[in-house]
Length: 136
Image (tube, rainbow, N blue to C red):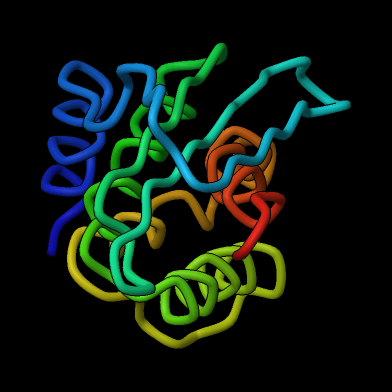
């Protein structure tokens, strides 16, 4: 995939965020506020048989933070919580530890963020909120 394709995916998710609407009926939730930027994300999860049926990520932050939250929602809906947690930890490790393993699907766009460590905080905002959720 090219850098232009990565940018297009991020721009699409920033402009058309998935799961940005509040989820009133939920089983668990988590929040994370960045000490560095002040950005904030609240995640709410509705489960069905151990899998994520619905997921919302309400972001008060940058376009990149909104795009990455949308990518997270798209990647995790329908996934068992245990696998979703592994994916979240994998994304975090990919950026923070520069883990060379590839990420599934559209999450591959995180490769384009590796060169910009100053953006990691925004890129991981929703994932950190997810990892703070009860039951994850």
